[in-house]
Amino acid sequence: MKSKFLAVARNYATQGEDHDMVLKHGQWQRAVQSYLATISFVDDHVGRLLDALDRSEHADNTLVVLWGDHGWHLGEKQHWRKHALWETTTRTTLIVATPEGLGRGQQSERLVSLIDLYPTLLELCGVPEREGLDGQSLVPLLQDPQRVWPRPVLTTFGFQNHAVRTERWRYIRYVDGGEELYDHDNDPKEWHNLASEPQHAAVIAELQRALPEENRR
Image: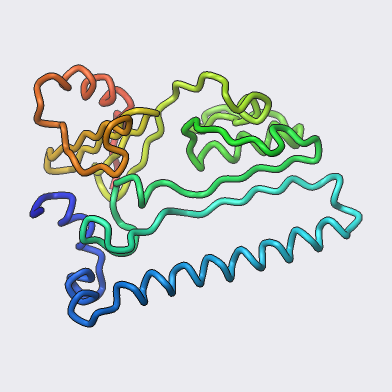
């Protein structure tokens, strides 16, 4: 598995090859256990915070938004931490709760970006819209979590390293011209890179339209 994507992923490991070190010292199970323990600890304190909000005078006029900044590899694809453009490292939690109960108890499978949070909060708070934003308000999805939402999501890591995600596809292009294409309908774990297969050229061309027209360091 020697390729550009491993080079990008491993370039930010402070001790070099994280995966080799985990295997050498037999720490895989303990590392996963420790990570899950931190999640449980945070979940517990989120619950305490929400319980306190429910008991306060602000319970009926407070918007609650819960999100994380990235996913985290725990040995998948011989990688640890974040610093990659695959599904595991670019997917995160996003929960929105409004006093009006928009979409309460419902889950949407539509793809959105964290840059959508700002315009969403503007609309929910009744603040005038701002021009020039890349994000898009998610209020329509809160009103109807199953509505059609064809907008692709772009993730950038480093200079000219981009991933484009739609409900079916993930396309990655690196600064050196390397490419990856994954079909999430048939390969949700992203093990089979389809970028070099001619029958997917049209799919790649369509996804490339979502890449930035200008890149800056």
